[in-house]
Each structure stands twice: as structure tokens, then as C-alpha cells.
Image (tube, rainbow, N blue to C red; front, top):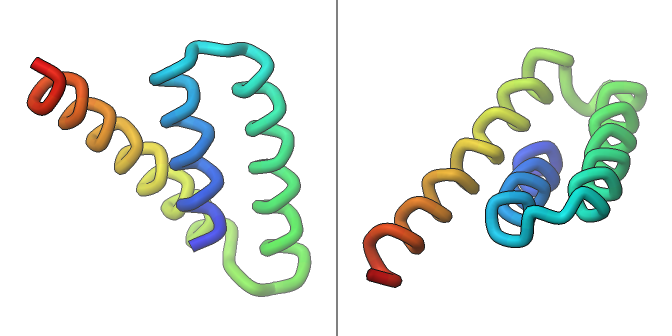
Amino acid sequence: GHAESCFFSIAYLWLTIHSMEYLFGGSIIGIITLYQRWRDNRHSAKQLLWGAIVGAGFAYGSYYAISKKILQ
């Protein structure tokens, strides 16, 4: 859940606001979170990678559904 949540937030903020500051700050927090989960043996690198992919994919899907289906 940590990797998914971080990368969902990063991707969704980028898709909605297009702010380099949010992208940079969120990426730093996301990398720190991934490193901490890996360092403390909470998750494998593969689990973290897939969590990041799923989170970013869900953000894109949510953004697409809201912008294309609901707002039109």
C-alpha cells in the first residue's frame, strides 16, 4: 500500500496540476518511502516496483474516468 499510495499521489497531482514542484517533491518522498520499505525488509524490490506501477496506473485510470466521463 505505501508504494501504491505514493505513486498514485505523484501521478494524480502531475495529471491534474502539472506542477514540476509537486512532481519533484513527490518523487523525493516516493523514493524515500520505497527505500525505507526495502531497507527494512518490508517488501522486495519487485513488490515495490509493482506497487508503484499499480498506483500510477490507478491514478491515470481515475483521472481518465473523471476527466472524460464525468466532466463532459
